[in-house]
Amino acid sequence: MPMTISQRVEALGQWLASHAGTEGGAVEAYIVPTADPHNDEYIPVRWQCRQWLTGFDGSAGLAVVTTRGTAALWTDSRYWLQAATQLDGTPFALMREGKPDTPTLAQWVKAQGITRVSAPADMVTLSDAAALSADGLEYVALPDAFDTLWTDRPAVPAEPIVVQPATCAGATMQQKLERLRQHLSKSGMTDACLFTDLADLAWLLNLRGADVAYNPVFVGYLGYEPATGSFTLFTHVHTLTAEASAQLHEGGVAVQPYEAATPWVAAHTTRLDPSQATMSLCADPRQQPTFSSPLEGWRAIKTEAEAEGFRQAMLRDGVAMVQFLRWLDEQQAAGNEVTEISADEKLTALRAQQPGYCELSFPTIAACGAHGAIVHYEATPHTNVRLTPHGLLLLDSGAQYDCGTTDLTRTIALGHLTAEERRVYTLVLKGHLRLAHLQFPEGTTGLQLDLAARQDMWAAGYDFGHGTGHGVGSHLCVHEGPHQIRKNVRPCTLIPFEPGMTITDEPGIYVEGRFGVRIENTLLCVPSRETDFGRFLRFETLTLCPYDLRAVERDMLTPDEVEQINAYHMVVRRRLMPLLTDEADKIWLARATASIEDDRG
Image (cartoon, rainbow, N blue to C red):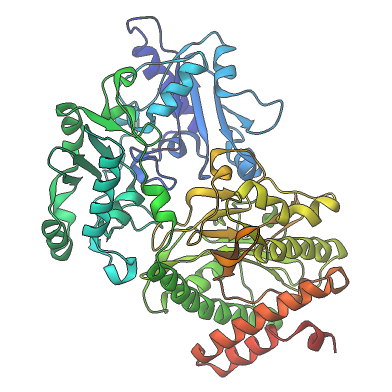
């Protein structure tokens, strides 16, 4: 019989106590991050230790268990409501990260007189360990507790690795590798170095995999030796398709088993990126030479081939969304039962019919009524509800196509709306439009752009806790850096925007216990014009899906906003209509994209 959460916490505390007699004093706290050996956002099941330990399945969180019977979990505002529910009745105290009165991990641990901590070495980056040290905590390497406690722990994933055609990437693998060689040479790199980020490897080698749910990446490392200019891929060799093996061979990339990466690092004077590489790769982080990988920044700038791939993916996604929204309206009008889960299943099935569909790009959020206030809600059989004939449905979804990745949110009127629901919807739409239509000078950062999305809602006394926008990968991870749009001062918000960067535009307002609104399109940064004051940039909207005008408070819109909505709907109608084969879908799209003036008249 599976252990309860309380039993798992107790077992981890006992395990830690049995390993506490290390040189230098007792280790009395065990940290369990949301992480894996490659510091990825979406974690393969093998490394979902925090979820196994706590029962909380949100995508962000950090747990700590001590030998003194205390336990806590930190998570951000997106998951406060979800975590409060899932942690109820467990030993974990919920720490609402970002609130002024919430202690940091270091403060909470040191308040109990604990200064020596441990964590699975392949889940802690060199930067993480340095941050612990700066906070007065000493990281002590211990065996991975979950190899003992999690008796049916899954194996390291090993799915097939396939080629991403250069026609989709806009550059061959050899061209990318030579660019990297030149960059490292110009930076004076004479030591070997190891690249650990899975999206970096997939992008650089023009390969894709299926080792991580929703992300077409494969588990691996890539080593580089400047003396010979040679690259070595460490991965599960048997998972390479014949085409992938041939591409690597032709490009001069050697292949070794995944497990050979750690001894390879030890055999060379090897530089690691401290923000990505984990403690499992080095014996002493204080003596570890480091470097900063340029690859995240490079893949953020899309080639024209990648940009065109996005446009094609958005066409396919737009068709599926029109089919779904028409179906949903018909079901609601007929009084047929539709639940959050069945809505999700229907949309997924329609996407799967599109050419080049691979999988979803993240778990769909289909949140009705009060569930819409849970920013990253995911319906389960326990929480699933029937869609009501009134109120709002927040639908945040996306897909991986062979040519690109999609991410969009529409908030849908299910019937009668309250005055506040209409007002909030319109405030969110106004912020969404303002950001999408900005023109801004080169060098502008996400921190500077963020106000555009919040200006109207701030004036009305509303705000939201999550970021306003994130990059999107090219048939890669749906969340991509290094740039973001958000109101917080962080390294990611200080990255200047450049042509070729993708970014989502997703403001929202969440009224706890009642409803939530979010509207999201994916944008592409493109040149706008050049004046005496310099070069200016703007955004091209990639997403093709109507806004729900039934939820709009018309009097709150300015003439410019009306024109922007009508112009966008004209583009949606012009591009999607020829792809629709069902006459009912065409009729629905024509109505959904009718100009606001026509709608009123």
